[in-house]
Image 1 (cartoon, rainbow, N blue to C red):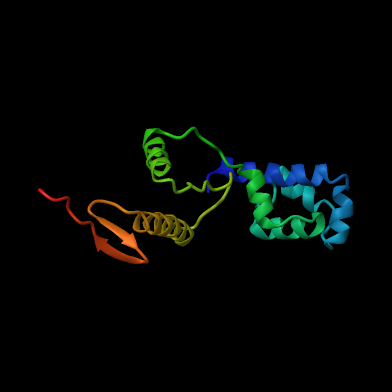
Image 2: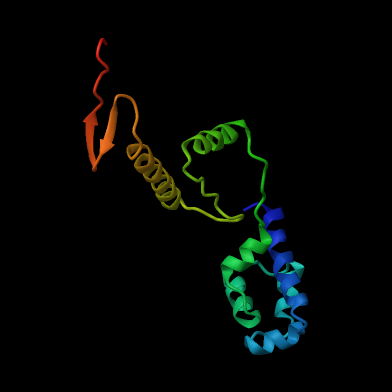
Length: 150
């Protein structure tokens, strides 16, 4: 991990400690750490490790997920033209497009599941509409009759 990212995480942890209203010494005592441990950590004389996030989270009441969301807040962008085209296509179908909330982190499987749900809703909606020469009557597809002379 590049040094600037380590420094970013170190500063985020330090800000949480300072914002807690507690002294570093008080937190060191609670966590049974030696005197000056946090000072060494925040000054860069000690390597930052994930266990530090866990320890300070326990003392200050935050989860690793909350810490990393604070260190890396979500960035929202205006939709680009392909996204606008997709939104327009959904609007035409009448199927509401569900937007994920800001900062929603989707792993690849979660993203696949979200796309699968949206497409299933869309296909069910399309399948329930009469279209072309076919229409539904009583749950069955029936062929429309032609007018005489056609």
